[in-house]
Image (cartoon, rainbow, N blue to C red; front, side, top):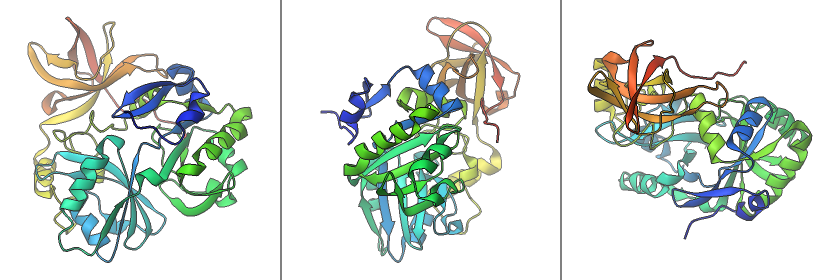
Length: 365
């Protein structure tokens, strides 16, 4: 039996086409992936991302505990701030990439990937040791909506307390009001555009979803599915766990080295391996590729230089914004120079491609 979010029946009425996404029945699209993608790039889109996991970590030792488990420096956080980080195995492989919200000192909310909720929870609990820290999975109580796009601020401004629209990137309000419901609102985004995330009680989700769509109708706001979410994040070179990051791909290889602070004093799990990778350089590197021959690079397609396989595609598609066939590929570092020609095995043919700069898309400030 597939799991459903509290919004399932609400988006069914919009003709959502649903798929099995890691055990969840979620909308891949409402109108079309291309239309939804373009709405977010030019106006605004509303996503149901209630399948994401939320875990509360609090108690006297919450900070030292998270410092030991996470790659970024959590001590740099202050109340109302958010940090992107990773959790790693001893060998540097990635357990998950996540966001940490500091509500107050020693009181944090972790936002984790849906497919990793049980695994992450087990990992956190297995390293609790003697720490005075409580770890509570609150995922089932919380629904999560993401309002994304250049007009997101104007739309939320019409239905929220006035301080919401003035939130700075990677900050949040723990208690505020959107469409007359009490919520937590942050401003992070996973699309390459400006955006707000609304964390609400599961029972308030349908009201907020409907009210936002109504409020944003005149500004071109439409409901969006996972298909557009993937093409949007990919163009902005934002990683997806299971593709650009995994137990076999370290945060440094996956291109999120900025979230790995090997200089922090606490010995976090994976620090030795990651420090070695940082100093010696990783053997593999995530690069952008653009097809020269006609064909689309897809996840797991092999990448060749001459007769040697040098890596594989992690994500690839025809970019709705650039109208080009592009991909991200994890390849041997010595060959990861912009302009280098490679070949991608597309079914039975090897097609020419070249390494290009990323991100593929960056919004105008």
